Length: 427
Image 1 (cartoon, rainbow, N blue to C red):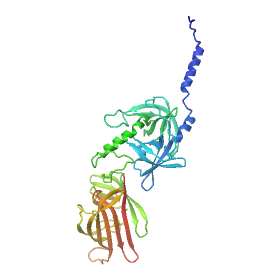
Image 2: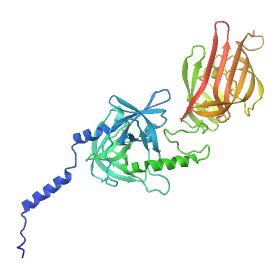
Image 3: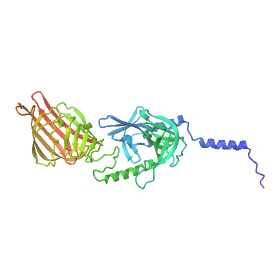
Image 4: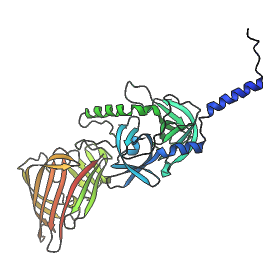
């Protein structure tokens, strides 16, 4: 028979409780220990345009061997991008885009930085201590501390029929450049990807929850398949870093990237026509420096960026509507830009031929131009003509010239011989 149950003294019970609480809190890390544990897995992202000029800076977190996640808006309009930490830089490529949730997974070859641990799904709790690590304003591996101040639904989710997303709201400070960084719990586990801050401040900062990372591959595949089924000219949102068909209509922010080649010296100069706005049927490039209609007809050239392609351009452009092999026409005009010289040219359209732009083979028509350029024009003027020979490769599919060549000899000591070739279309 067992003896009577003895009461445990209050001070002893308190000691047991203290030990239990201490054991539960043992996994929490001091901020400096947490930073040392995960900072090697948070990298800076740098993006560049086609001329290797810097565009944007952001952050990315290693989630698997050779795989990082950042925000899609960090990669917007980039021709290339790298990840960087201290003096170490790696080239990176886009693997899985999910623009609806602003999450893009990128991959890096021969990359050995360790992945971070992921917090269990649904483990985020309002009031818990959190830490943001990223690269605000280019300051690499910056740590900020705060609490998880809210779980917000209804923004950042997917399409119709999907459950609302639960953004993580935090007081941990983030700034431009923090986008794509990590929001960690007190054990150094990834809770989310820091995405944006409220414009009016107030310690309102947000991250996409870690649960979304597992869904990235499937959602990216579904999105790309849906996009492939969209009709030409669809107004659906473009995906940063994803190749867009060359013949897709231009939108504000897109740019035509040409290279101008001086055939006498071999010098190559990039020429960019960036679409600033579309106003009805008018497409304005380079702040109004070039204006076209939707069908490619040239309305005006105020800033001739493309050399002879612009300074000798006929009214309406070098190509006529409905151009077909065998067509001929005569041109007699004063160029509206450059030295405003009189041109008298004959144009002849040849047959089709293949031509590649950004690795895509197009069927183009060759149009040849021969004639004279005059130093003056008008009744009673003394006209002294100099020879002009040129050609254009025109893509009916794109509705524009993909290569132009012109040679103009003004005498024994003065000549222009150049080409302008479309390299790619920046989206």
